[in-house]
Length: 62
Image 1: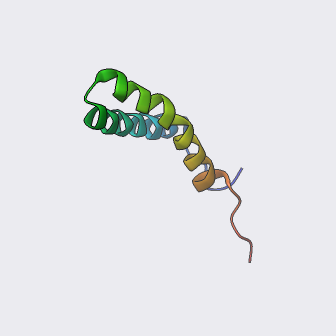
Image 2: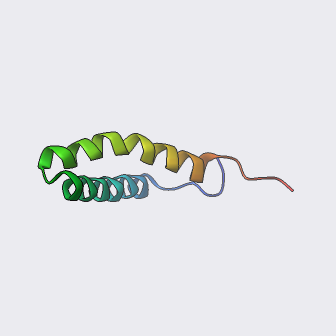
């Protein structure tokens, strides 16, 4: 594993913060709890992809 490994608690924190942002964004757009929840459900896979690309992709070796 690379030297940029993140502890499990930090991963949960990242996902929780992204879920909260997704909920607020969805609630403000749709003006309903269901809309906010839908944004969370559809936003978490994109959060996982973002996490993968930022943390787990190998660094460029010089």
